[in-house]
Length: 233
Image 1 (cartoon, rainbow, N blue to C red):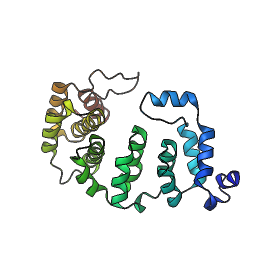
Image 2: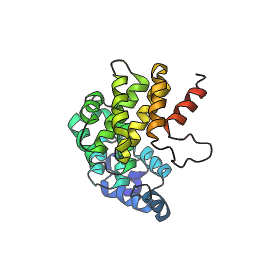
Image 3: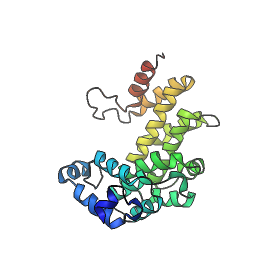
Image 4: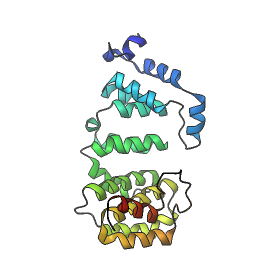
């Protein structure tokens, strides 16, 4: 019985069909139209999706089955109710290659892969992958290390790659490399001057539209503003 299952009283009996039916009810054409402009083919309000995940609680088997539907909303829900450490390295590698919409890719990397014991292995494996979307995941994991665990990273080498390749990189990979450039400049004062210079010369995302009150993703502006907020020079 879908209603009973989805309210949490018989969570173990929840089926994919029940979940898909509720996701269909939550689908809003207006939200879908906005999301489609950003490459995401779903119309579910993310707040309502998180509320559904909260009711379902953690269910790894259900998460795997929802992922297999290839439905964007179902996959986003799967990433909210899964156990990140339960996925094997091979499963995560397959999943990142299947995650073609931006939101699914972003949540998979940030909510699951970063919490996985295989994250460092996958960072190495994905970093130079010929698929730019997969490579962007490797760069995202590298940016995480730049900020939280830089020991052992070749920061000058990363700047070399960014300087040589970011300007002509495909959009999602370019965005990930730009984030890494900004993070190096923000977190590592000894490399800040070079990071700023690379950003100024390449002009990647210089004209990106930014809402009032938000920080531009243009690396020199991003670096300068974040350092200012942290009380640096």
